[in-house]
Length: 140
Image (cartoon, rainbow, N blue to C red; front, side, top):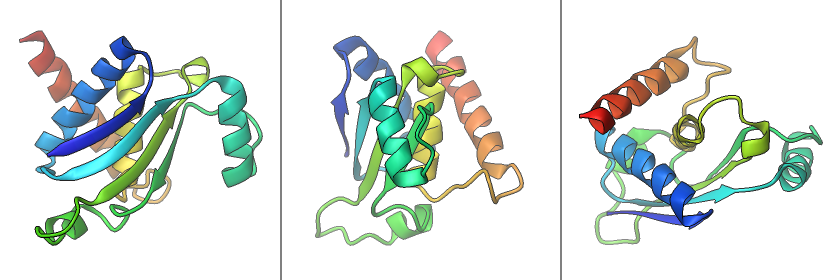
């Protein structure tokens, strides 16, 4: 079971939870917890300044906990213990240039160890593929 703790309006939380659950299913992740929060520009700037030394708002930040070694690590997670805690995703709509759903997927992929700054485009290709599949199933 995927457990998502949200800090967002019910409508936004529902949309973002749907896409995160879809992606977890597509990536065959069936057991994990994560946090998903919508923050304003001031809060995002403060967090970005503290953690990345860039005191301006950004669209999405991820703070991995148990999944940063990748999906293979999750597959080896002990069944008799607590579910792996992937971490937290923070999204700032005021800084967003993409849909909040795309940013949620982007953040989730970072929690799973993907890094578009070092992987020759693999993460962003996967992100686009997942969003295309999500759009196709949503319109069906």
